[in-house]
Image (cartoon, rainbow, N blue to C red):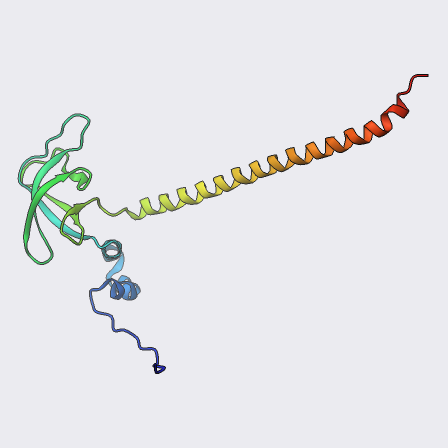
Length: 176
């Protein structure tokens, strides 16, 4: 094999790599309003999700204690139309929605509706929760290790005191 110099791969416009590399320039040009939609697209691209608009073909039926469900139609990015059932798990906005309502739906790479990606607030909460949980578990583990070591060392210390007292005690407590 020959040693070849490292070559940089070209980045196709519209790909997730292109979006990641061009984010700062787009944010500075597009402003804050455009930044939110760009971040949303980046998150979706990272999870291989695509947003689409679905039109409900019947009103959402809500059964007690269950998720609402409705039949809907949506278009895939390639233009083909799909239809199927949407639930409040995949599209939270369909509760009590009448027929003909347009709702945002997130599609996987196969064109099937999936739960929406987490919001930035949800991601921050999950990260903080994971960090606090890891810290608390570590603290509990350290406290348990401390208590276990202390118990073992106390037993050894008391055993040495007892053996020392067994040697010295009879001389100190002899009855005269």
